[in-house]
Length: 565
Image (cartoon, rainbow, N blue to C red; front, top):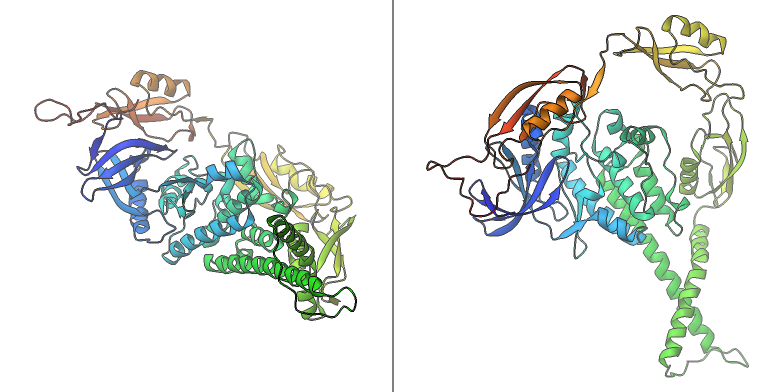
């Protein structure tokens, strides 16, 4: 595209990024004579006044953040119908590209990148800013290995102003915390969860939860346990795996309480793994030197004579030392454990998943193994029903704790009541040994009183006598349809798309645009993929082309047009 000026100062040079919320351009600040990046919001967001206000406020707050691991925000502005952010231009590429090429990544690299991102989050959190969209696509890596986190504050503006009105989710559901997926309260620990998912992907080359659609992935975040990374990749330090599992715990209270606490943990992991490796290598070299100083006959030690080694001999010696170091690592670990207290209290692992129990046992200095699968009326399926040695007893460190996992209640299968009428459900549940729990009402097109969903689901294992919560229809719902994306279409195309989707074209307004060509739709009242009642009217705005100058010419371009459509 040809260059053009924005706000009389920023010269757009070329498009370098295109996302669901904005288009990013490489530009030059003619006032300060430096290259920058400019993010221009897509038109469908600019007509939402609440969103624009939140966007400006959060971006201005992000502009106050100054840290080497944060992409700097220089300016926030508006020209005509264009809202934009001026940012630092990073000479690098997103972490997502590096993961695609190099994962599984070396654990030392994972620790290094995670610590840098956590440092960025620490500064933001202390300034009362929650990122809400930590993912590899928003982490830029410079050529010298510096990680820079981008889009601070923008995700919050989207969540506050847009998600509440039924618009599509902005961001990647693969990195959302369970509380984000539920639409619940989000805090600093939500960012820590997302960073934990990023660490998981770096160390394994895969995200823990995936599916055919965003809803499936969101439900997995809420309901399923994260599979430990070591089940996919060998050689991960146990301490690092425990760190990742703690970051991605389902419950906020079980995660690290702050980014600083996570940084401290990563520093400890890095220090311990480094020291264990160096100590083993030094011990191996000392052992090798001692063997060479012993005399063949009397085994009396004497000063070793200096001798010159060929390059091949030096290479062999290094290989022997490394192999010896690897063999000595378990001995060093046992030596460290021998210095600690001989006995300690066995932790209570009851009702934990096996992954949680494994982490808790290892933290306390014990090993763990699976025993039998047993029926239990009180313990959830696939959680620890009992253990040996028992919780609270004294046992030697290093001892193996055997855990028996629950198979659920022997005859406690929850009946399926979805589709039944509310009037008959209580009696039906009682027949199978269950009680009716919380009843919630939800707007639906189904007949009033029809059961739409239940918790636990039908067929699940649950203790007899437990309660089953249900959601019933209020019968007031109207048939829904999905709003099409008409931004960028010609007026005729947009009208046809709206009608075909089951809606009605509302008011059509016209305005000048530096981005959209003459006759093309540049704004629609409702965001694409929004679910609305059929027959709803949708207003649109159409571009009249670029603003005209006083002499009837164009707006000053001397090159090719930068409009789209």
